[in-house]
Image (cartoon, rainbow, N blue to C red; front, side, top):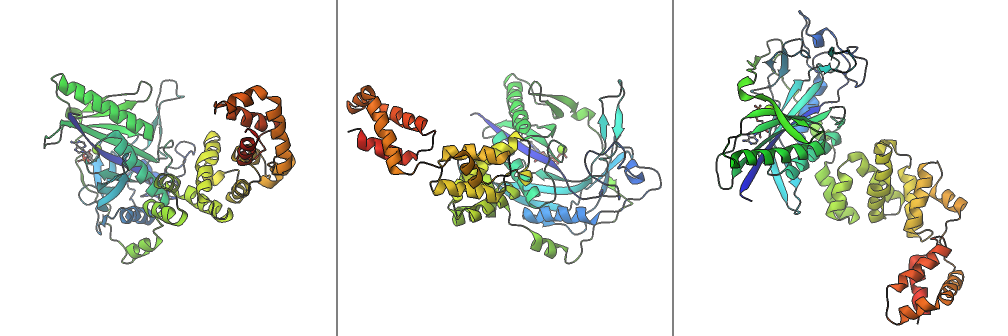
Length: 477
Ligand code: ADP
Ligand code: MG
């Protein structure tokens, strides 16, 4: 590879406070348009913003989780621009002194190594409203429910060097803000979205290339695709003698490409200045101490603990600890299933996650509780049923309130453990298929599978595979 890729992300994270950052209006998603926008959010003359203490605490908590400096005395600035969904004519943000600075985050790379990505800053700001272009007979509607919703914008250093790394970084931040309970993480509803800054340069060059910024990517897949598209586009431009123009671009998921939104020449001059209605943010003396105490076990630490405590491999531990709720559920299963950790991981990230995805449910809405799943796992480990039959049992459990034992009992799915009964079936199968027996004895090992299949067919999968193998081997001699 002759080219080096440089990526920096700006992630907008909606803080899940009950009320807005500068007003008492509710923030709940999905209300009828403009039913949750008060005079402050509408930007009516004469109103004054009042800072939401919880938003400050949540931003600071994020800072603690990424080893950052929490600034006492951060300042709110007005970022001036005109847009229909911004009736005040300015957005309140933080420029020179953000609440959080100089953090860092470790991400896992594909080759198993790790890398630390710097977090330049995370500043508090208010979200704008929304323009709605549907259902208005060619007119555009403005919904100001989102106006004033608290955000932190998390800005990384330009230190990622592939789309995969950028996605790993974004997933890690996504996981952390949900661990902290400061953001619901819902990307479809826009609670967590990202702008991707991308540039390329020839290997060995010291100066960074000219970057483009692709706006408002609200899925990990879009981030990866938009970045890869930009990398190829920029390399093409330079290799064919052109120059990359610094600009803001939009990703179009329909044809998987990015296009120009505005160039540097058209860029806004935001005329930032400190908001005279808001004082610098003085933190309570004991706020950071309190937050530090409330800090939960974070994904990295949990992952390592899962490896040590349950003997999980790194990949399993990483996958299961990505979501705090999923990790808690997993630990419950292990507890109820007498420490069957490996099976618990497989079932939670396999069948259970599959069923949740299929039904568009979160782990908190699961149809099968940890205790019920644990009983199912115990029935595999005590040889009552095989892993294959267990999947059938799971499906029945998912669509009813029955326990694993009830399903096994009702459907008569217990494994045939009676060795005499199984031996009779094996004898019958071997006796009825002399040709295949001869083939096996003359060295065609593959035919063994034929016999196993026959026995499983007759027993409807209820025979213990290990016992079947053993019996067949002793008979086919
Ligand atoms: P702005 O506010 O205009 O978007 P910033 O300096 O805050 O500018 O940078 C925004 C993001 O762009 C940061 O995440 C930073 O890491 C990234 N970035 C800056 N320069 C480059 C570059 N040459 N290539 C890729 N990313 C860059
Ligand atoms: Mg930017």
